[in-house]
Amino acid sequence: MTATVGASNRARTAQRGVRSRRGSVRRVPPVIWAFLAIPLATELALVFWPAINSFYISLTKWNGAGAPEFIGFKNFQNLTTDPVFLQALVNNVFWVVGFGGASVVIGLLLAVALNRPRRGVGLYRSAIYLPMVFSLAVTGLFWRLLYQPNGAVNTVLGGIGLGAWERQWLADPATALVAVLVAAVWRQCGYIMVLYLAGLKGVDPTLEEAAAVDGANKWQRFWQIVMPQLRGVNAVVFAVTVIDSLRTFDIVWAMTRGGPYNSTQLLSTYMYQTSFTTVNLGYGSAIAVVIFLLAIVFIIGYLVRASRTED
Image (cartoon, rainbow, N blue to C red; front, top):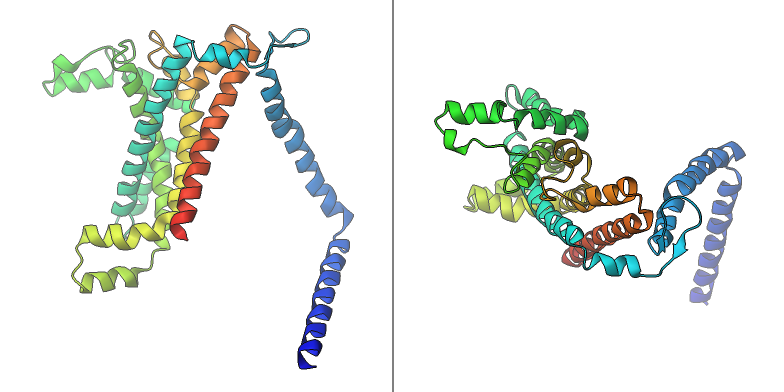
């Protein structure tokens, strides 16, 4: 009898909760729904619909005029034998590893070094983050001047007795991609530093102090105590870094336009050239789909692995 009464009470409580939620939804003024509907419609029209439409365009042959000609997966088949695309894909793998690894490691080291309050630490943080204020195009033009034959890089090398290292950095296929990568990391590491600084503020210092009392050294305390508490930040940093790596365009285009001899060609720059220089929108959309799929595979794979680790 008691169990029956308890079940009845729980059922009435659940019904009241449902009616309460429905009533709260009904009490939302229409103007609120309007303010929600307008950005939603804008997002659907300007972001989601073009993205979905690009999947269809990737299955067509289209130069932007007239009706697209449906050709199935021929664009994707052509990508597998396109030497420029394959070179761009290899460059993108190098870019993801180099850009992601260097910016994350440098950003984390800077965050750890500037985490504790000391005189002038705010100035250092601001100075390191300052490159993020400038657009990638401006950053590219700035570093392009530094890499000129008579620019600051060669001048400094000559001044310290390393004149044999002087070269035309952006005109040499052997050094162009690394030179652009250095410029991109210089801009990105400040942003990664800020993300890790925010994460380090949430680290419980008592755990680290207890580990120090137990005899753990600084490296052990950082790797075993601090890093596990930064899992959420690591997920954000990984997602941001992979997405930025795959969509990098501005700085490469401003510095080299994919040259010389496609040595700095990335998937994004090749997609732009194919779509808007040779006006082959179907082929360019196929490259865009590849970029999208690579980003999804990287991010979902990492998030699934991170969630399993937490469980």
